[in-house]
Amino acid sequence: APRQRVFSGIQPTAGSFHLGNYLGALRNWIALQDTHDAFYCVVDLHSITIAKDPEELRSNTRYAAAQLLAMGIDPERSTLFVQSHVAEHTRLSWVLECLTGYGEAARMTQFKDKSARQAEEHVSVGLFTYPALMAADILLYRTDVVPVGEDQRQHLELSRTLAQRFNSRFGETFVVPDAHIPQDTARIFDLQDPDSKMSKSVPSGLIELMEEPKRMAKRVRSAVTDSGREIHYDPENKAGVSNLLVIHSAMTGRSIADLEAAYEGRGYGDLKKDLGQILGDFVTPFQERVRTYLDDPAELDKILRRGAEHAREVASETVRTVFDRVGF
Ligand code: ADP
Ligand code: NA
Image (cartoon, rainbow, N blue to C red; front, side):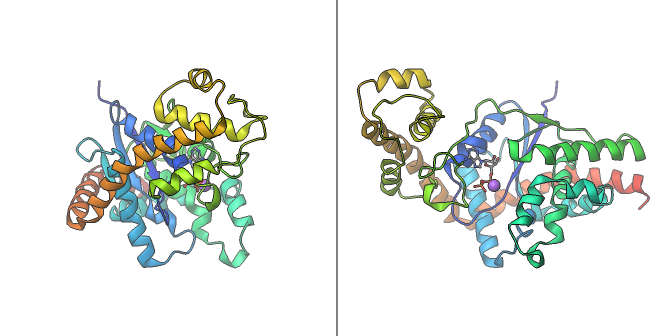
């Protein structure tokens, strides 16, 4: 049987990806390459829903691609590309926007949250129609499964609705994608405020993958823990220590129970020191590979061009069918 197709996208960000992005999403992208026909996209079109500096956007997009390659996304096995390189995303997006109800889009909680945090004149129409573009990203590739975190669940549901709506109005065209519940992912919390998830919007509690390993170890050493002494997994009462255990376990593959036993009678300092070492050992070769890609722009361009060419082959066929059915 042919492999199921998986699609996933990530926005380019200022600065590097963080440990939450890696353990919560990107590591799973790498694993899915073994079992799925994977399409992975740096979604720069989505980035400008909030104003961006052009040169920064351009360099962040390349930086994101370099990090994905350095992490283990293999362009020989997967299709890795940049969203703006494949014009079909915007072409299909328009059709899907016209199938989306105003009220349906207005109910998206991410839009409600993001728009509530800004003055009305800074809220773009693009931020509002973002879920239709995301639906286009997915549906263009006849995607079977989409790995989604909690935060994208509602958007994926809308993608499914739009696929079904198009199919019933214009005839069977789109594959209706399923949510893929990632097995091997972890939710990572902020080092300084372990009740909140680690997020690039709160730089103080981040572990950025491109940070110098010594400084990274220092950040881990100064992570907020509680006043107790026991290294014990208890997210309710010992959120900081529990977060460190989760990170340790995710990075080493050792179970939490095994770690609790190994740290019996030892202090938080030991756990933090070991974790700093583990993270340093992981990021050192990763960072070298990122620099290798960034130092060879022609090679990076070639990889992304090949990815876009392959993506376009699939996407253009979808758009041709869709435009024909719509009456263009
Ligand atoms: P941020 O929260 O830093 O803005 P994004 O929203 O861009 O990160 O998330 C990109 C991907 O990384 C998503 O799949 C998201 O679920 C995942 N992710 C982000 N932060 C975390 C975290 N703290 N723990 C686990 N996964 C995360
Ligand atoms: Na976010």
